[in-house]
Length: 129
Image 1 (cartoon, rainbow, N blue to C red):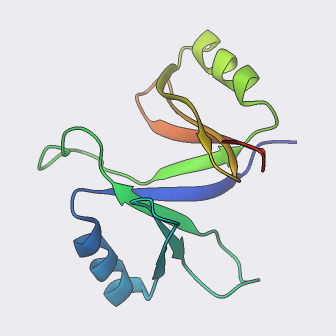
Image 2 (cartoon, rainbow, N blue to C red; image 1 turned 135 degrees about the vertical axis):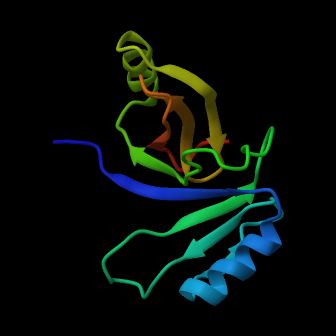
Image 3 (cartoon, helix red, strand yellow; image 1 turned 90 degrees about the vertical axis):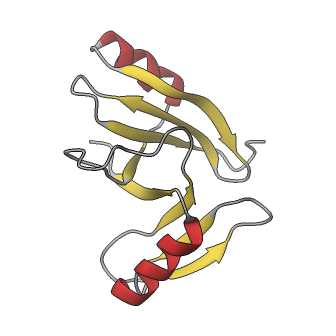
């Protein structure tokens, strides 16, 4: 069985401006997660089709104006993050955000595929710290 997309993240230079945009445009709801600069996005009613996501401050440089694609980061759930990170590299990918804990959620890492597209992989682990 394949690994499903379970979460997406919007990286924003100005998080408040981005939240206002999505609240007005799509009626998304934002809730700050603990004391972190991270907001959980609720995109619809519980039990309805679709996934929820998160919004966080952008790290690094802002994408160049006119770039072909600036995108959300989609995250897939995996059973073993370490194995998938090894497989990503073995198949021509590149790790761009090393494995890190998301407290009470699990272990997260970002990779580039062979075309330079970024994606996340998450291994659930409520004991992650």
